[in-house]
Length: 358
Image (cartoon, rainbow, N blue to C red; front, side, top):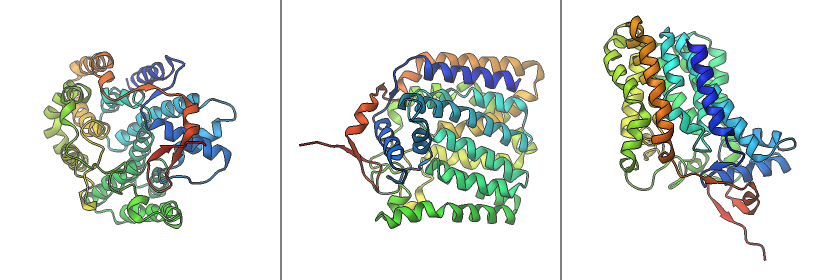
């Protein structure tokens, strides 16, 4: 069931990405393209944003356009997200249908529609790493967390939070040590930012008004309808029904799912740093898909006659959301890579200005 479900979902991602020859994205895609161009011209760190996306683009630019590089990275990220959760699902001994439901989480397709969504790759590696934690493969856990810091900072923080919760629940001192070692291995990335003159808050994207901090009030209420549709109400209802069984049969995963859901609903998982995250109720749907898929999968698996019907209903809902909710998930315009050449991206914040030649 999972193989065809995942393959079909990836086909939808590919159609969203390659259905047009133009490159679509938000305003923040242009500075990413500029950082790719700089990385291609002279390898180095030009911004506090995690560099993997820019390195990937720079490696492809001699043979492909910026648009192709972005689309290939995004499609690979979708595959990594689905595959990473599959590894986690198997390590957690959750039903196969959980991974199938996760592949068709409606908001997952926004990750290929609202470019750039680099977090998809980060969350994919995070789920794979959490699977390594559950199977006591601590070397893989170290590699996964250290690698995630180079892909997407918020995903790495989410990974560290979830890994710490699991390690505490399992009383796994070796896992906690592995998380600490991974953080140390990733520290040269942040040290390089400090040596470039950035402060600690900037190096972690915590500076006021930066990527991970919200400067105003709550940001989700204006998009309530879209959030509800992209959350997948059918799967959410099944998850609510399956939550008690998840608690009885998969206690560790249920605790982790509860922690993730709590922080998602409150937008406060950066509260220790004095800020709410800009990964609000819309963007946070990627992480909410984990507890929903886990509990809904348990519910569906206990009703074999209804399993296929539940999955089919969720797939139909997701396909419908492509037309009725996805267009409202983000601001999306045609992006001209040549625009990037006119940008100056700040070294210590993810902000940019237009260079004016005299």
